[in-house]
Length: 95
Image (cartoon, rainbow, N blue to C red):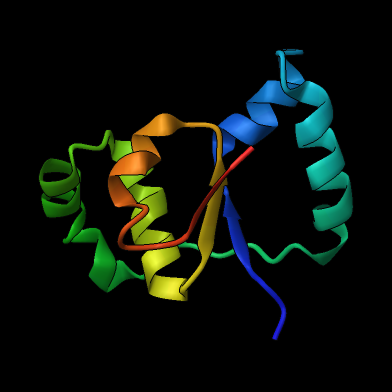
């Protein structure tokens, strides 16, 4: 079975605004993008976001991404250290 990832927005921003880890992020995405599927959160899961946000002490976009990763059994690829709070619940890969 192929590994599936949720790529955090900051990976794309690293490239767009030419940050320190731009090269690593670009290499990762160059390999990954030909196989990308676009997914979103189910309507039923939106009601859980306030609880996820407060219980895990995440901001809205991190809570959203956490919930999508949970729902689809994905590993989050990120540079956002806030995801250290959830790595015991879901897979998190830091670039």
